[in-house]
Image (cartoon, rainbow, N blue to C red; front, top):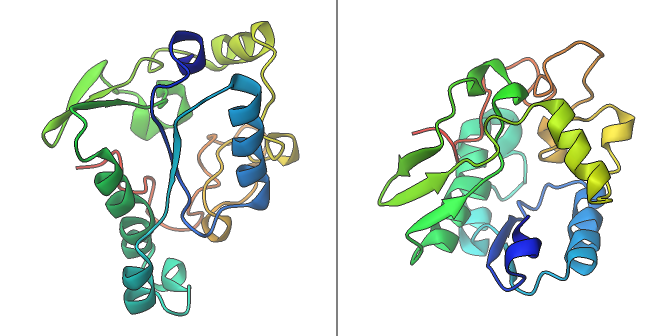
Length: 178
C-alpha cells in the first residue's frame, strides 16, 4: 500500500538479530518487487546487546527484557523525529487485538492502524489482487512470525498468534503495549 502511494515514504524494518533467514530474504524481495526507496533496517544498539545480552540467551530467561532491547528501544530510536507512524495490526490476529482503534496515542506520536478491521479473507484478497508473495514460512504453519527462539508452528484452529512465546503468559513484544 505504501509503495502505491509513495515509494520514498520511510519504512522501518526491525532486525532483532534473531530473525529467521526467510524473513530477511522476504524483506529484500519485497523491497525489490515494490520499488521501496527508503527502507530503514534498524538493529539493537551493539553496546546494549553486549552488556545486556552477551550470550544472546536473554529471550529464554527474560523475554520481556529481550523484546525491549531488540524491538522496543530500537523502534523508539527510529521513530524519533516522526510525529506519527502506521502499522499493520489487525483485530482478527488475536483475542488481545480485538479492540484496536483507528488512531491511538503512542507517547508524543500518533499511531495509525488502518488495517484493524480487515479480516483474513480481505487480506488474502489484497495479496491475490496485487500479486504479492506470502512469507515463505506461512506455508509451513507460521501465520505469525517473529524471532526464531520465540516463534513456533501453529496448529489448525489455533489463534494465529498462539505460536508466539508459546507456553508463556506473554502475548505482545511491547511495541503495541503501554
